[in-house]
Length: 258
Image 1 (cartoon, rainbow, N blue to C red):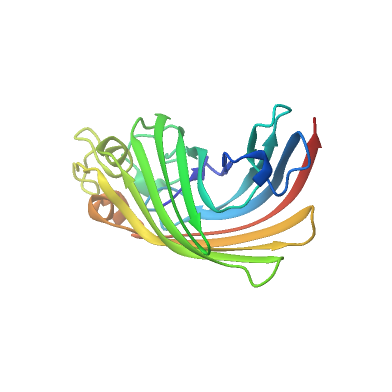
Image 2: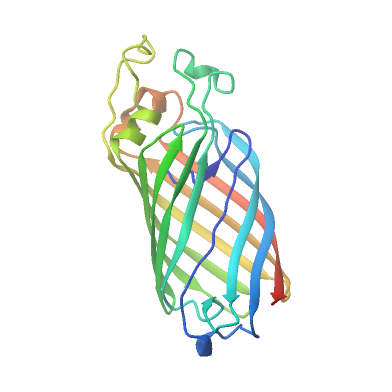
């Protein structure tokens, strides 16, 4: 499951695509300055990995579109074609029996902050992307994501995308969220060790409508199926192997010259 940004009852989404290109290719550039999008969304996600209960959370949206320095150095602002890098940040919210009484007997897992790097390569209507992050706090494991999209743009206002998604994690992450220690073991939760590897596989689809040059509306939905030890975990047995999410948001573009 790609539970990218959830913080208890609050989700956080922050994405920025950094494509290093020559200034002459920066089609949207109009001199030194910065172009970015700010917005907010509502997102429905499982309350924890493997849960069948869902929560609605506010999601801040941050998108860096272009940064051009006076010396001619440009980040973004051109075509989406080619290879690009971006930072990847995620927050996994606290898991506790206070919010999920079906997990009584399991220890509380504190909020985890994840930092890493994402990459994307796009050719025409196809793109592939991946991300790798390291956790701090609630877990100290490694998570990875791989995906591919088909992109359809019938006109200048509408953009549709969709494709498969794969989530990976090491044993530290897997044991944190799907394992049960000997001290936690009970009739409902036998002692369980979860191995790293493929955690889930699924599909994601989204749409963007460009209202005008300043405003855009986005919506998306995903389905992920937990696999391997994540699917077989007694924690998942309290909920569901199938994990869904739905999001709807509004963004505004800002252009600031230097």
